[in-house]
Image (cartoon, rainbow, N blue to C red; front, side):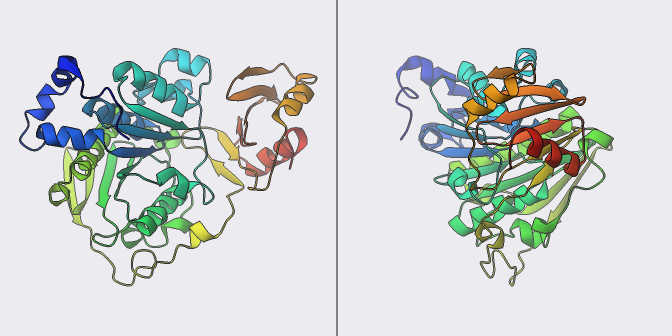
Length: 350
């Protein structure tokens, strides 16, 4: 359903005047954008920049999914967050939605504070006109790829590291999918090069996000013929722009044979390192249940707790632990998954 006040009054016409005058969009195109749903998965540098551009363009519904909370290190490049968000450890999805409401209150925002996994990815992308990748790991991207191919949803891959970035537009059944470009991407592990070890130049993330957003707008406008058929690679410091053929593999396991093993597995990864952070996320199995009030009461006898309506936080053995209502936890101050799992089992459950 289109938000009711997007096209009422002169103010709304003025808001999009510089956009509707474009021959590529016009008034009819603007109405298509208002009726569209864009899903942004991952609200880091790519996701926040993309969400900002799409909200300003008048995309009717923005579904914003991220597992993390705002940290001070995010403020260098993640455009929707402010110092107060980091001080309060707000979930990124809620902080982003709150900021965007102050930019364009006429739209619908659907914040999702969840880890992307096989149990929820199809629900997250359901009904999407387009999906925008703002993720930081290839396992989650492989999940997105399988879900979008299975349901025929176009999506835009994006990644950046250091001063480099890349992007590709994926039309299931028509173009190459991510598994065509990166075979067995679902088995990929986090490489030793990360934003923590080599950094990220803010402008390269903004540039890739701008490319992704433009591709997303083309799709939502029904102008798919204008979308890029290439895998693009940008080296911003070296002023290099390269396009590579995105060739579909006919016997691709995902888009050719329709094998969706990651979706059908039914479980979740036990741990995942967080890009650019000395931290490990621990994710309980789908069958795990937790009495959050009891946990708060129990931990409150041992630790000084900080909390908001989304999470609680405490410190132990030089590490910071953040626990969400679904039982998911982030342990900051270690990159050792065994240490994180031991701490989780001792204080939270499992």
